[in-house]
Image (tube, rainbow over all chains, first blue to last red; front, side, top):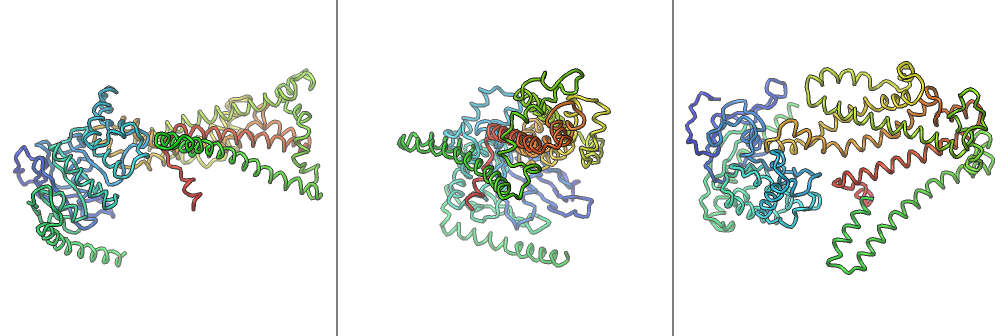
Length: 275
Length: 310
């Protein structure tokens, strides 16, 4: 919207969005607005969770920040660099397995270094170190199809970490995992996050996940996605998710989301009626 | 074979924790699997041949028109001499001066197989290169794709005169025919394979700073390989079909010539014998390709196994 708005951010901020909007398939019949007027500042080392009704554009914002897609409105900076193309500084982790099935685990993890032409010894050393950080040293020579879903996502995290990113973008990375595995993966992710010092932007539609992980929760409205509220969670870590405070936050977030989910439903029904 | 290999692996991996006897049991089961596959293949062919023989025994199949396997396979030595088409057309060559029946069959089979193989290799290399180039350079796409789409429905028969105009008589027109029959479809198949590469894999490479060239070389080409091998297997049979058409007119010798000879001399035994030889060759080629597929594409899941338990 207001790209003329002066960027008022300190250069140390991990991610800064100013008036960011995205229209998919702009200029065609299928054009639809995914995001509108997003202003967001994310500190280095901060853990921020995006929640919102499905189709609200929270994943879109992640793609825009990664540089894989261009915003149609506004501007995005990361550590005072304007985001225009993808960068190894901002690693993206997907919901589905995105490991290269034809490469072994260590070759997957060191893929980014292979692209830069690093030697095999160097690549293997970096992969071994990254795999150790995700607790998968034993799997270094395995192939992705020999691993469970949770292990594959840990390898994907290791691959992202091997690039030493300053920002870790995670698009519902644990959505395909069962509840127990997901809880373990959340603990694991918090350890990794603490060690790496990177900012994490994490998209989910599980309120529990937001309460377990976030320093701040960004709640999105129904489509077109705008920021409804930014909700800080000041619970000390490690968090007791069954405490009364956690329960109170969960209820508040559920309330915040409910209106938006209702609106998203109403909109979808209206769309179905016109179709 | 994947199953065999996997079972073998599982057995080996389990060897550390489980007794060696179990490992050996796994290994023997793997062997049994191959044996049972061979057994079923024999049964399948035997059943088909048996029905044919029965029809002959009941007098439904006239042995002069539809000679059953025991007749057309019974006089292999006699039929073999007809394969001596290699030198038949040369002036001053008599039937008897030619190589022995066995040698004749081998020469003919070898020549046809070589044409199929050469055609397949040339068509695959060309088609995959062109397909990748179409997606790599947008201009190339717009410049080349319409023509390729336009030419792909043309029947190989229509190319036959072109093959002879361009290459005359010999190996070249037969190989050209195989290439031209496969090339256009394989280009389109390559493009559709590229379009089906998971965008996540490409995005991963992009976020790691890969250039367009690196994405094509390290992500897209390996990702389309499984599909391309499947396409190659399907086209293998097409190649065997086309090479016979080419040989029956454009080339001095080969399986196609033998079929034409059999037609002209009203020799059904020779037709069925040649068909049997082609069948065995095609089967062997397919088997070798599947073997290669499992070696090269070890990471593919075995869907067939999953369907079997339904």
